[in-house]
Length: 387
Image (tube, rainbow, N blue to C red):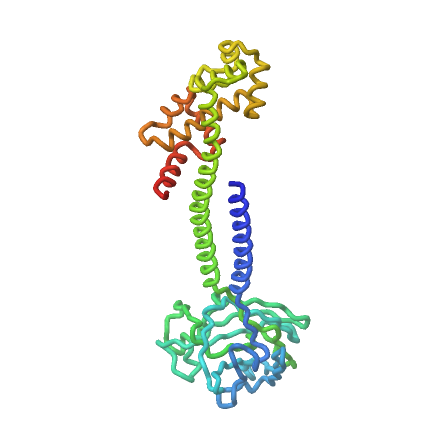
C-alpha cells in the first residue's frame, strides 16, 4: 500500500501543479486590456473624423503614436455660448468605412490626461439604438458621458462605462423621458474626448491623452477554470477510489498468502515435538488461542513452563512476543472466516477467535489489514468473483 500511496501523492501533486498553472493562465486571460493607441495598431481600428462628418473646428488635433493631443481656444461665454473643442475616435471597418463595435465586454476606459490649464473634461460614447437612432446621424445616437480631471502633470483616470449619463439635450431633442438612462455598448460609433462647461475660455489650451485603453473582465475564462478544476478533482477522486480498492485488494491477497504458512505452522504445533517444553507451549497456544481468557499467565500455569522460557520459545520460533503471536493467530483465522463465510457476522467471528470486545477487534484488524472487517469481506468477495 505504501507504493500506491506514493503514486497517489505524486499524482495529486502533479494535479495541483497543473491546476495552479491553468488557474494562473485563466485569471491572467480573464483581464481584458485593449490599447487604442496607436490608431493603426489598435484591435479596434479608428480614425479622426472627416470634415464631412462634422470635424470640430475649434480643435487642432495632433495624433502621435502614443498620444492624442488637441489645442484649442474657446471664446468667452456670450460670444461663443455653445463652443466646445474635442477629439473623436471614429471606429471603422477594414475598408475604412464607419463601423459600430461591441464594447459590452469592457467595464472601463483608462487613460492619462494632461492639459493646460488644469480643468475638467468630458468623455462621450455615442451608441446606436434601434428605437431612436438613424444610421450615420450621430445626434440621434444616445450619447452617455462622464467627466474626468486633467492637469499639467497628468492625471490617471479610470472611467466606469456602467456609470455614465445621457445628457438632457438628447432627451429634449427626441422628446423622451429623461429618467430613461438605460444604454447598451454593443454598437458604439465613436469615443470622444472634449471640453466641459468648466473648461477655461479665452486662453490658449491643450489636452493630451495617452495610455488609452479599454479594460474589463472576460468571465468565460473563470467559468472554464471552475469547470476544469471540478472535472479534474472528480476525475482524481474516481481514479483514487478504484485504484485504492485494487491496491488494497492486492495487498490483502499478498498478506493472506503470507499468513498461510502461519496457519500451517499452527497445525504442525499440534504434532509431537522433540523439545517437550517447546512442544507444550506451542501446542497449548495453537489449541487455545480462541479462548478470550488466554494470557501469558495461563500458558505458564497450564504448561508448567516459566515465563522466560515461553518468551524464548516464541522469539526463537516465530520472532514474536506472546501478545503479538496470539493476535496474529486470531486475526489470521478471522480473515479466513471472513473470506469463507458470508453468514457469520463480524461480532460472531470476533467472539469465535477469542475477542470479547468487538470494537477492539475492529481496531486490531484494521491495523493489521488496512481496512475494516466488513470492507475486507467485500474485497474478498470481489476477489473471488474476479477469480
